[in-house]
Amino acid sequence: MENIVNNKIAEIINSVRPEIRFNSQQDTELFGVLDSLDIILIVEELERQFNISIEAEQIVPENFASLRTLEAFVKSCTR
Amino acid sequence: MNLQFQGARINGIQLVLPKREVSFDSEASSYNFSLQQSAKLKAVLGFDRRRVVADDVTCSDLVVAGFEALSRDGLLDLKSLDAIIVVTQTPDYLIPGTSYVIHGRLGLRQDMLCLDINQGCAGFVVGLTTAFSLLNQKAIRRVALVNVDVVSRLVAFGDRNSRPIIGDAASITIVDATSDESLIYGNIKVDGVGWDALMVPAGGMKIRPGPQTAIPEIDANGNSRALDNLVMRGDAVFNFVMKEVPPMIHSLLKDSGFELSQVDGFAFHQPNPFMLRKLAEKLGVPLEKMPMDLVSKFGNSSGVSIPAVLCTNFEASYFEQPRVMCLAGFGVGLTWGSLLMNMSKISFLNVLEV
Image 1 (cartoon, one colour):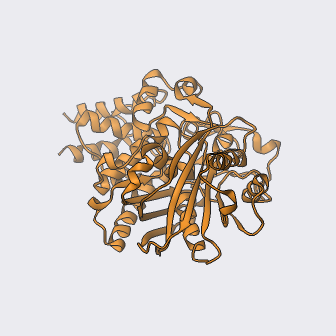
Image 2 (cartoon, each protein chain N blue to C red; image 1 turned 180 degrees about the vertical axis):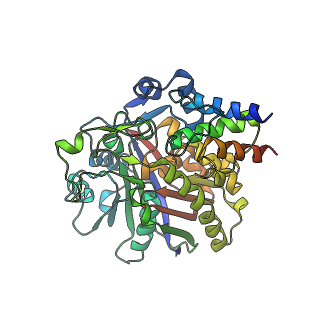
Image 3 (tube, rainbow over the protein chains, first blue to last red; image 1 turned 90 degrees about the horizontal axis):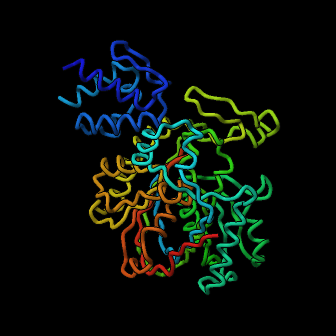
């Protein structure tokens, strides 16, 4: 289950920034790599695919710092 | 700071839009967006159509056309103006202020006040609070608040963060003294630490423009821009808006004694539909009370966005009976400001295309 979530998040990020191949097996820095436009598209896609609602105050650098922090954040939203 | 005003009202608003329209579809290839990405950007961020001026059109061109139309249509006697406030970030010249250029081109009377304010997305709120303050003078009974920007001329061709949303426009808001004693509530805050979140590095006295400042460089996200171009740190702006705007609106409501449900309309600055939807959700505002279509139809026109929302989403007849309106602007500075006011008997909410 955990791997499915991780893979899905990596897929979403790759769909937004296809030129950077994100791998769910590796923790990759996102902050400084993604811009605000990317983050907005990722939030929209996370909400749709995981059926979650991400509050405005949750769209902060801490949650989008790396692939691992984003995975942990999405999992906390799905609980 | 919390503000209160009395004895002032908006009489009418004229929006001026350039006829020239560009579509995101026609530009998407210049940012290397895939078809799938383009579709997402259109849906989520509202990238679609925007109005931009030709390369030789300045702020005063748009504004003079707007004033002349008001005069021609019998909606405004130019001789009745006691003050003109021009709020812009893209003046015709460094010196003099654009208000003087407009004054001269229109041949306005000498016995009046001209004032220029360098503001962007909070410029309608800042301009209105200044107009309301001027109306405390017995000699000033009518103020023309002009919001105008041609920011498209400062945005780099390869800047995917800014170029797809930027639109050009002008608005002329006629603000009159009135015997109506209902209070207007305001709230303005500034965080100058974030002055560089939205800026044009070259062109002022710190970095003079020249061949070197016109050379584009590519940033980490593939945006190509020069020092002569607008640069927006989108993440900083996004976080500041989400953090500061909701408490500002709560404070405004508390100060005024109004409940959120008593507000008839929320005319907010228009960064993009995503941010507006998040703000509406956080505030508990029904989406139908907060228009968020400006970026898709005309582009984000900085300080003109709020009057543009009013002119394109409401008819003057809607204000035949008093409506409680909440206006909010936020952006460059960083500045965030809001107003809660009764709007009624609006003479005109016009759109002029030039």
